[in-house]
Image (cartoon, rainbow, N blue to C red; front, side, top):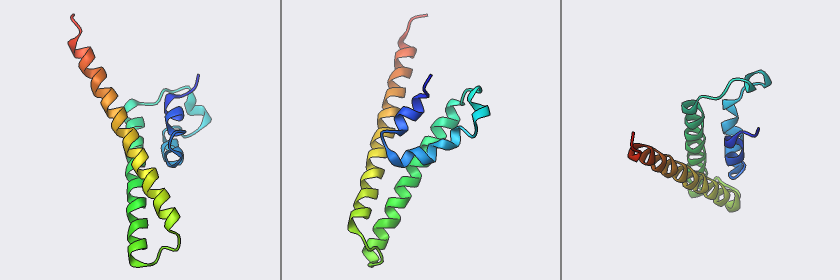
Length: 104
């Protein structure tokens, strides 16, 4: 069975290497990943992409960056990752609200 986080991380290439901290080895595949760890790794990876983009923009502004294209790619990756994170958050909030509205 495929891990849903793996399919999400394929949408944003920069997240693939950062989220892989959730699975450390083949022996840990039997143990299910903790939701807070997976979501925390996702938050950290989005934050890392945002920080890398900000550094690239600072280097471009100071004249140290050689390639404008790489700066724009980093900014777009960070923006897409943030949009994905916001959509995941919105779905989680919607699911929580739906569960809370269920009659007991």
